[in-house]
Length: 170
Image 1 (tube, helix red, strand yellow):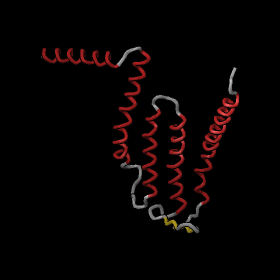
Image 2 (cartoon, one colour):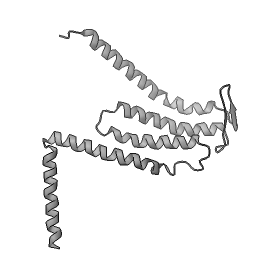
Image 3 (cartoon, one colour):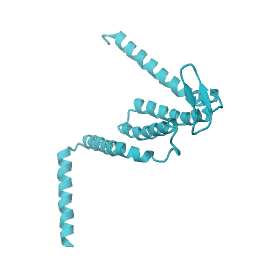
Image 4 (cartoon, one colour):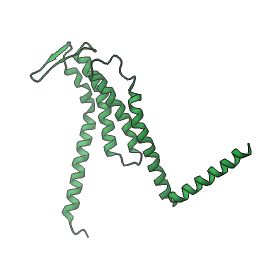
């Protein structure tokens, strides 16, 4: 019997609230995307907080449409990253980074063509994330198969010596 029934009830309630908020955000993404239709189809937009001038896209409407086309997928990927329970979830950071750079390019009015050079900015991120994923996978595989890292290194060393023997033959 549970000694603290209120704790499990609170945990379930918190889980339900968090899940409901996430589901509500996901369900609202079409409305978030189509919010661009509420912006003016003019070159500049004045509010009491700021004035926005659409330089590259010529209309505020088109600028916001392009921004929402980058923001909504990035938002969904961020939710997926936060809620994912798989060992490979760090890989989701790569498309998140791509959409973040694209969104930055859209906001930066001086960029002529978006979606072109993001891969060069993502390359350093990928250099860190991809080896990290393989390291995690190797450790999980070793734990599941009952092997430790030392036996793996010894096996690798014996293969290197075998390859060296083959190389010496030629």
